Length: 279
Image 1 (cartoon, rainbow, N blue to C red):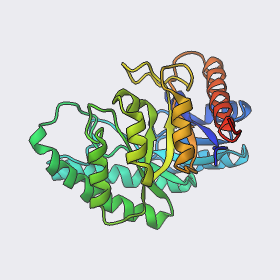
Image 2: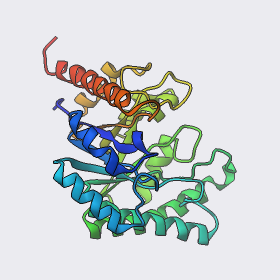
Image 3: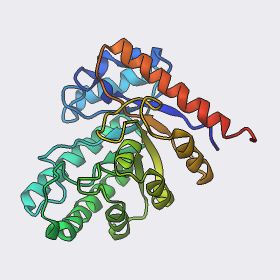
C-alpha cells in the first residue's frame, strides 16, 4: 500500500487556541489531525474544554488520529527522583484521559527528558525508570482504548538512540506498543534509512518534517534535504500502513503556514502515488 493518509499536527498553531484554527485546517483539505498538548493550545487538565474541542472536531468532520503527550524539562519519566517520576506519570495519565475524550487512535510519548546533559553512567538506570512509568501509562491507555506509541527523539537526547528505543520496547510488559518515527529527528542523526529498517517491526505512524541536516527546522516535506523518494520507497517495501502526520513549524501567518502545509501534502502524495506505477 502506498496511498497513505497525510494529516497535519495542530502544533503549528501551538500558541493559539485549538478552537481558533480547526476550521482553517479543515478548509485547507486536511481531514486527519494530531492534537498538540501545549497548554495555550489545549489544556489537557481542563476536561470541559477538551470535551468542547472534541465536539467541535466532530462537527467539522475531522478525524483525531493522534494526541502528542506533553513534554518539558519537568516531565521526566527517567528521573532518579521518585517524586519527579510520579509527577511525570500523573501528567501522562491526565493527558491520556484527554486523548480518550478526543477519540484519538494513538497517544504519542517522548520516552525521555528534554535534556542533553545527562550522565552516561545513569543511562541504563534511567531506561529502567522509563519502563516502570511506561508500563503504568500503557495499562491506563489500554483501559481507555487508546494505542500508545513512542517517538524517536533528537539524536543528542535520551531515546535518540535507536538501540535504546529497542531496549525499552523489549523491556516493557506489553508488546502492544508502537513507534512514531520522526523523520526530522532521524535525519539529524544521519541514519534515516537505518532507523526505518531497525524500527520497522514496530512502526505505527510517522511524524513527517524536513530539515537541512543541522537543526530540527520542522519544514514541510520537500523544503529541506530529506530524500523523501527513498524514504517512501522504504516504507512501501516494508508494507507500512499507518498515516503520515506532518509536524511543521508555526512560523509566519496562518494562511502561509497552511499554504506550505498543502504543498508538503501534495509533494508526499505525488511521490507515494508514483510507487504504484511500474518503472
